[in-house]
Image (tube, rainbow, N blue to C red; front, side, top):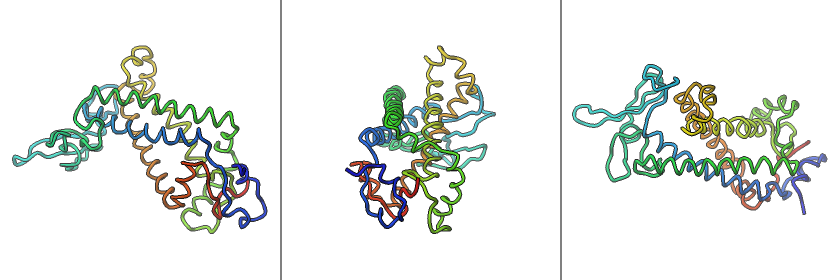
Length: 285
């Protein structure tokens, strides 16, 4: 059976490997990938449900309108309801989208995010918290299982940035921008993929878990120093929301690259494990 190692052992030119099928993603990698995809979707929607109960973010240890970073509000103008979004002191009218929008019960009301973006759709803080806690555990299990499995199988070293990878970042970016004909030699993951996965797996996921824990009253009571290190509960909330926004940006970029670099091949590899090498896939050590 052709193994993933096949993608990294050739040196006699790309023509002989283009079109070769390799087993790129094992069952644990595929399962955890889809589990954290589901977990992130539910966490996003339930998190917006929770956010609706206090639709603002403050750069402060406690609620402080003078240090407000983001807020959603609704008011009446000329007898009509108007929804507004305020970011760093600059307000924008966002009626029917944010601030004053779908309430999940066939009407519109003052709420930050519309019903179609929250879980549950109608305002229900208690159920939103239950969904959020359940899938926070699902995300943690998927993240830990992937890292442990990759470490045991020796595949984690393919993912971790090495000193030589940093010099290849610019050439790889130039290749993506069509300013360079060929990418620098790389293994299963190119240097930009490695950097992105390292930031997501080893920085952003742990931080979003830690900031989420700091928002739990139970954890705050047992480990008050954790909340203090993050700047207080309101600051922890702001960090948590910001990390989610950054992760959404990562996922949007990830989906765009999946679509533009061979959607069927990429999707098949994440469903069956098998990937067909293209001209510039997995070249070099």
